[in-house]
Length: 251
Image (cartoon, rainbow, N blue to C red; front, side, top):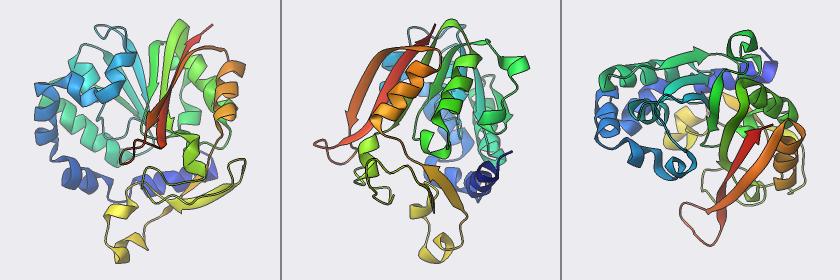
């Protein structure tokens, strides 16, 4: 495992289970919401799936299973890949409470077992801001492509590169030059929800942010045909870009 992956793992295993319980409810409470309306729990991402029943989905950096469990309830065969044991615990307890099957691999995404999973999936799906955890976006996209069957689809939803120069999502990330390619240390996503004395003690993550062209070109260079690129407004200010979704198909 790379040094920066180890660093990110420490951050994402810092009271993560307790955080999810406090902010999303117990696994049983979360499962009840998922069962009641799984499509609603998928939010805008539901519109990017052609179907669910029997579809093999790799949920990359799938965290606490907030999208994996609804997908499984809709009939998909879901495998979560994530770096945090705490995230796995919450996700698997939620899946059990929802009475669905979920496969969960705790690993460095860059070290996914491609002998086992190469060419296995119909869909690779990621959301919630993950690209900045990987310092080489070409390596990352190459791995995503390798997990898909020929003709398989990648749904990549992430923070808009506009957030390099402005914190439009209000998550406390530092601004920098748009074309800056520096790697930097910053707080993990949940730090802002903790009291200041705990926040100061929390492990930092290692980040690398990308421009729009870096993301699009990495998709094109690594075996994908880009089919769609949507931009979405920021959560609290619809005049500013906050997220994007790229849809691409393996050649």
